[in-house]
Image 1: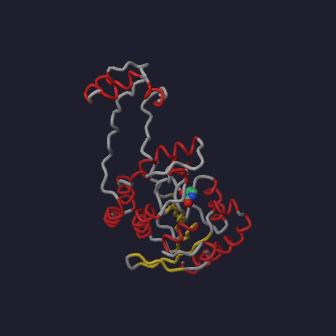
Image 2: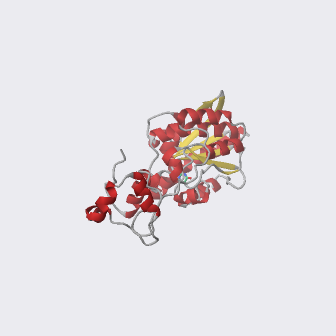
Image 3: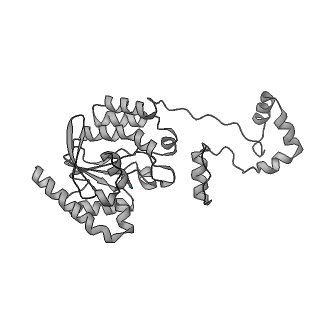
Length: 281
Ligand code: URA
């Protein structure tokens, strides 16, 4: 069951309604169902047989408060749902374009249905450096590109400080390609479902170095429970399908915006990446 939000403000309530599946407005005028339920003619209509009810809905005029019939939205073709399907589909993709199309056609459940876009990647595929964040926010969902909001602006500055940019030599993606409702931290089941996609994404993009931004990206890819403060700045080998990638976690730019005193630590990590890339080439 989907719990109602503790703090009820308009945005929370909208998120909750979407999560509960009420993602479409079917009338122009709000209807007070509590009042309607006590009105005698409504009691009668509740007792109508289904086909009578359908007819009375179809006959409702434009100003009637009766609910209008809902035209089902065309269901877009999907190529499977859940972790197993994600793993099969991801493994079958042999190019980044194929992977992107497969993810767009994948049934990612409520998460995907509530997102506008599959936020696949930005930057130069095949770059030595691949940056991986957590999940798109509202602006990224709207633009269909990762890290275009305020965190993205800080990320661009961080990259520029070590001679990197998404326009020239860096590739950027996220663990979860669909915006979680209400910008929440994606839960474990969602991360598990999306992991085959990002792992295949890494294999196809072939970076030398992976920068993981924040605890969610680092813990999901490294499969560890330690917090980001403990693991940041430490190099680890990530191995998928027999291929090794040098990977390092650092603080997420969103965290650095709230805790600017930690920027020094992130700067150290960036310098370590610069050295690693220089020694790799
Ligand atoms: N935060 C992320 O982790 N990823 C984005 O794309 C944007 C904000």
